[in-house]
Length: 409
Image 1 (spheres, rainbow, N blue to C red):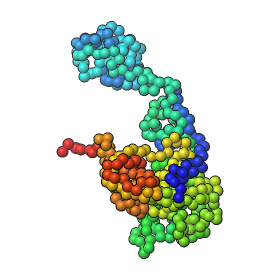
Image 2 (image 1 turned 180 degrees about the vertical axis):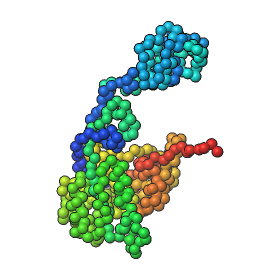
Image 3 (image 1 turned 90 degrees about the horizontal axis):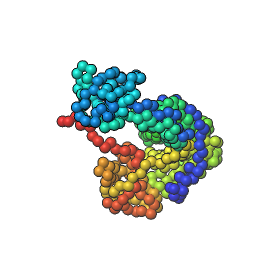
Image 4 (image 1 turned 90 degrees about the vertical axis):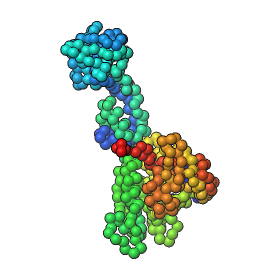
């Protein structure tokens, strides 16, 4: 059996980058930058007020109780050439540019007005409530480097600096299918004897969308060599083909039978649990990932091999899920011949002392335990038991919500 690290390294070494394109910023979420982004201008572009209040000279408000003459009103979206002189103030709104001569802002809560006079009730230090030009992002700064996968916050920054069409790597087109005569569509009403609903394709679609790709659904493919061969041919027009089922050692594993004659695909036994059977190679110019049939095995093999490869194709620097070290909240007995992925709850993140316990049954068909889990406790090969209280590495595929909403009742 191939060790996990060796198998993943072999997969990733076979993956190259896709081409580069420009996309509207509205379509940027999840895309990976192909070039560094350098700020073409300051953010903010001018010194402005962080508060509603009065723009003043700090020298005039060094003591509480200063009384100043109000000489103007400056709302956001406007500017003025009027200079604030000694003993003067301009009423200013949040975001409005600082007028000439003013170097600080007295917030409105600390003022009172009578006619054209304003009294500043507290002393105000120079620079108070003033956002300097370039205080967030100075012109010429490398804001994001190539390989950054864009989140909504990245998108907001790009908009702020005027990058409306970032250069990103192309999204791979990924054709995916489920195989097996036993499968019926998930929306089917009632089941024929011996059939089950196809959970793999809906799950794969979500996993693929989360990886930022363009999915192409080839549907459920029966255990018919000619039908499967045609589906694989159509799938090979994409960048990647992903199938589930039919890659093990059974007499009815049609995917393996068809591919052994028609494609450059290796069939591996990977030393992981679940998801030992795995196929990888090429169908024509397309990469091929043959995942097992059991749904938890699909999830594990996708997370360990397919997702990292898809992210690497798009230029992402980071391709694996984040990890943390937690304390085992119960004894975990595993197979020492394999790297074992235990589906677990994570508790205590807010306190900084996370512990993990199994989220349910660990059989490769028990998808409900994976749905309930926050991540995989990764037990390395050579370990037969993790005792309660021992440290264990957790690969997080979901971060639990950490604060509960309350209406005060």
